[in-house]
Image 1 (tube, helix red, strand yellow):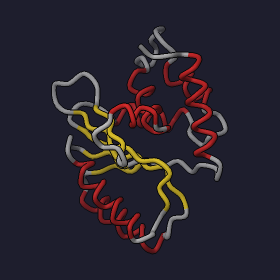
Image 2 (tube, one colour):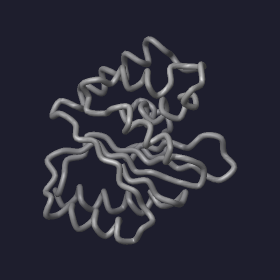
Image 3 (cartoon, rainbow, N blue to C red):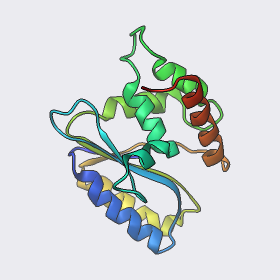
Image 4 (spheres, helix red, strand yellow):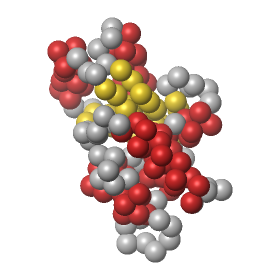
Length: 168
């Protein structure tokens, strides 16, 4: 997950990701952008394959995850399931409570993010892109190492959450 210090930063990251994918440098299982414009209460979640469909983003595993994170109450609040409950539901996926709290803390108005669930990365191709982004200083990289079956496990966990706690 790349978190940019501007609401439009993820758009540039999306271009770089598409370039890496076209070069065969990695396999993308799911990818979304999160754009949080100034003055708006919630971020916009966009799916890279269906950029005009907010519904497609919310049905993606990453879109559903970010939607849950953004709806989680502030730590210490009694309302809703919260980050700790979400982390308990995601046990075994490679995504832990600390990662979810870091995402929640970094996503705020006037930021954007590019979340990618990927595999089969050619590190010789991907590493220079990551290093250039970090060298600019306008992006933070959050990373979780997931098991090989992560896409299926995450889909099942998000489906279970959706069934048990439907959102209005």
